[in-house]
Length: 171
Image (cartoon, rainbow, N blue to C red; front, side, top):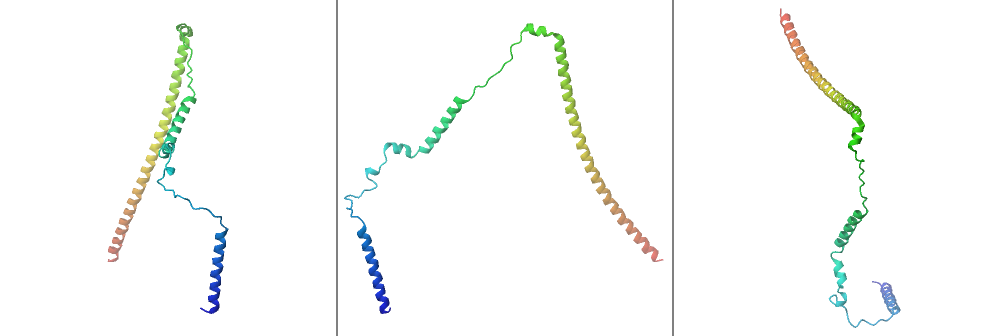
């Protein structure tokens, strides 16, 4: 190290030391504590209510909210209203007469017949569609088999033609 460098390093150390001393002198003076507190001291022990809430607090809170929600739902749920038709007396039924009963029976039979006919038509249409699809698949399979058979027959015919040409050429 040169002489100038060593002087500069000493100057920097003096400046740093002076800045540190100035910073420490700017702090207010406080007396150190007479006693150091330890974690085992009574001051740091939780009170009875802190111990009560420490471990089960989240479980207790969620259980309380759930029971409150169930209670709220039970209290605020509307009561279902059951509407009943007024009772029909024997005199009212007899007064309706047998003509009305026949009309009602015929209407019920007509409705049941129409429903049955509609279901029958839907079932028939479904069955026809399934049969058509099955026949189309079978037709395609038959066409593939016939094409393969025709190809085989053409190969055999070509073989016979070559054999007859070979026999005829030798004469």
